[in-house]
Image: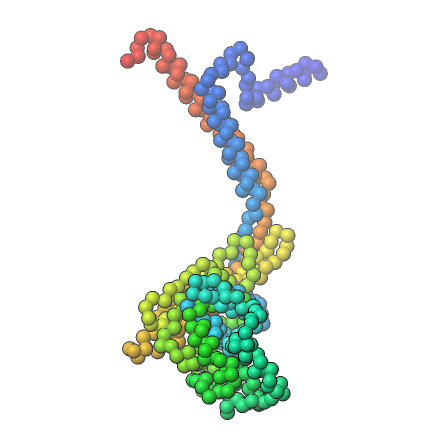
Length: 391
């Protein structure tokens, strides 16, 4: 049995793919050491790169038909209009189902900006002096009967019989479908100094930020000057109270997204700006294609949101040439029937192990070839030098 085992061991030795030489027959060279150090550094760098790639998550896209129904879509927005006062701007939402949201104020905030783009402090401050306009107005309002019912100047309706403020008069006019041409003669507006306030704000800008909730169907939302109202099924903005021939709709989009954020989401309009060149008003039309998106995180959490792409068309409105149109920024959106699902998954450890082995083996083999080439070249050069055959 001992001889059988010895014979078996001898036979197995013939399969050794890595035959060893005696230490005495090995030659260590400076060039070999340099190649070994460079090879070790390359191995380390490639290993670090492969490890970094292995630790990231893989995102796999898939396409499905969107079967969701009766959902609402959230539109997040943060847009600056540096040449348009907040008192002039309104935002309206309409969709193909016929639903309308006129002069939206809930979940939206208007921040007044000075000509330099800085926020105007709107916190009320205590002031001294009886001649201060704000104090005088507060005193005059305090004298009024809180149960009073002032006139709406013919714009009364079933829900609104009284208009005790200028804003209520304007709202009654809007609901009635009337243009609010002039504040003169309207006691509420004269008492509040509405016309003077409009003149004071004429050089201001506005930052509109917040979110809208809309039906998940095709529609549009737009920013435009003037109160909006419906007249004979036509959407109208009343621009006459401002006494302007043109409106500068220059705007800067800080953020515009449809739904929640997810890792890697790119919103094409973030950081986009449009400058109104010339004296004529401009109509900006953004045609937005929205793609429903579902993002599945590694832990199982699901984010239902949207991506979008867009094209922009802008047109100057030269009234002296008879051109018609409403100055403003219009966002017309359509919903794709295809849903994109993005799924996170961890990368294969076996793939990582295979790559590491390939890196070590490949670099080691190439380094050996380079070392051998350098060694034999130097040997050949030395022999020729010794024989006096060089140059």
